Picture 1 (tube, rainbow, N blue to C red):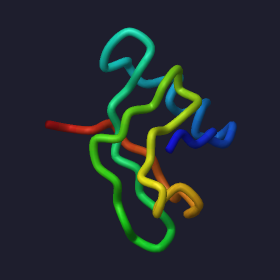
Picture 2: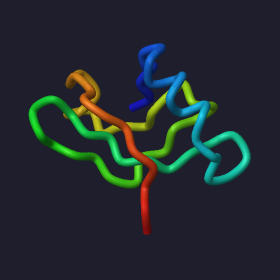
Picture 3: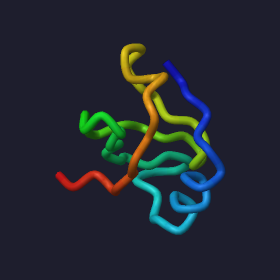
Picture 4: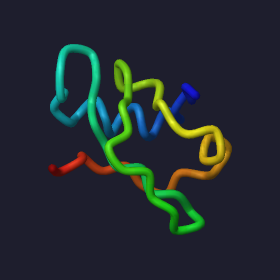
Amino acid sequence: MRVALERKWIDRLLKLPESGMGYQRVDVHFSNRRVARNVTVFNAEQAELPAELARLSIRDIKPHRG
């Protein structure tokens, strides 16, 4: 499910390198301590998240390593 990111996350992602043309691979950390790893973010604006995580509050987004 594609989720529109808040402006603060877009601003952060724009400062990070792309993984490929128009996308980034990131780890999304949620406020309930769950983590979605290797998430695709398109154009620093939309994250492809599993439906069960799509409505959770994001605590942090970090570049995916690996």
